[in-house]
Image 1 (spheres, rainbow over the protein chains, first blue to last red):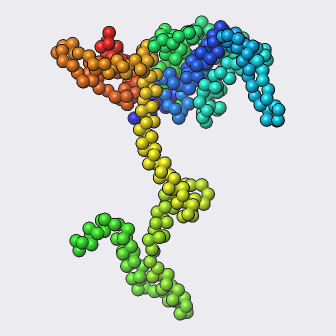
Image 2: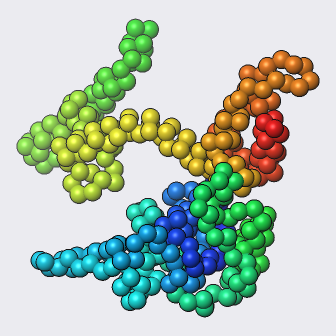
Length: 179
Length: 176
């Protein structure tokens, strides 16, 4: 087989996270970051896309998770198990709720920290500094439905024109410069 | 001699040994030395026949090129690492086939979802037996006789997007 995807095209996707369930949204973001929505997917190379998430402080947890879900971490010292409720995390660092969810769904390999993680951009408000790449915010990904039907292409449903390619590239003519 | 040549074909190591023995001992041009002891030493060096043990060692060490530490130089360490490497190679020749099929399936899944299907539905539709409309006899491949395997379909999805779309359209059409 030849080696497809040598010139990787990276698209930018914009997602509005308000009132979307955390886990379900993360489960659609993670494959896009990894590149599994492309038929030229290669597990050993970094072929994913950029994802910009806005309104990350308005995500939704079902049930009583805002008060009952605990985010724990250990400082390394004896007796250093710290735990915070999801509500407290929302007040301190609202982006980290979605960030932890997405990063937990990515594979733990060498590509992750240097390449895949930096491509996830999460912002708490509705402003983001990537207007030049993403375009106007009217082209956004559809909210994740409750039930995934068979025609659900990783969140990029039919008619979704929100993915923008870098300037100067056309899907049929990949750029000649190396990425 | 015919017997000798066939014997050599079966065991090239023995053949090499005999020729090497000839070369080492048949050296008539001994250089002039000052003393008898040096002469004897020189003759001893020239008549050294490499035994089977050091040949075996050299073979293993050659296979251990690029290994870390003393494993690329010392036989006893190299042997352990090389044995492990050969075990992994045996196992992974079988695992390679599994890995590639996994990759083809992932690529097919991504390619097929662009057109509103999922991989499981697509394979099911491809394998359902359908009557050919013109002649009325059943084709073995299902879905109008498509017998493309996952490797070829994944290759089409990657490199020939329009042909892949055509295949997906045929499969969808045959199942409506």
